[in-house]
Length: 329
Image (cartoon, rainbow, N blue to C red):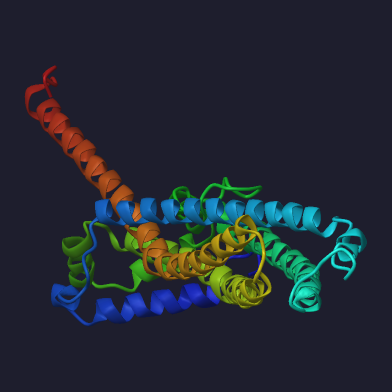
């Protein structure tokens, strides 16, 4: 996304607003879904928890692979030639199973070598997932955003979901004031009253709320659609496929190696599922949280401004009629 205000999208938003307003009375809003800000806040907190689990799981998988590499390299460093000598016929006697036993050991040694290659590839895949989450950026509202940054992690952690509503409001007030005022100027008195009754906002502030929602949607959709989710899901799917090969290669391996491989398999599956849940929740709640937060802020500001003006009006009445303003007013 370019580091400019998307006027084309902004005009689309205003066009939708205008159509809604020109439809007439407050019945236009009868079917509009009402989402409580506290429920949205809970959803955002759950999203943060989900990302914490993703981050923790990535670290666990990385650690498991590193431990597996150490264990396998230790086994591979055995003196296999000396071990083979112990299977020579003058040192062993059995019912002809020596050659078969050595062949199995040879296969195990080959499997360990192949397993090392698979683990190295999976390490690279998991490292790439972490790097993508923390470093793949989109630019919007004059800021750079990453998936990890949305949850306060990494270089861009200051540009997060909790701060996005006010960041977006500041930005659209600077860049979209003309659009918001233009939208307000097209409305009749009745249409303005309908918006005020439904939202507790004047049309200009209502336009700001919808512009904030559009900007938040742009950030989230660009992060999800333009590479991050598709790339990460593909990397995790590939790692899961590699894990199937690891399980096959771990036959006859030490119990600790088998356990490590099984743990990595389960963690990779969990990681893919958690990422899928994160993408869906981000799209469902991210922009809605930004919109609702700004709506609440602007409504409270409007209420405070109305109270201030009412006090000023009463003070003026006292001044005009009694020549003084009582201290209690």
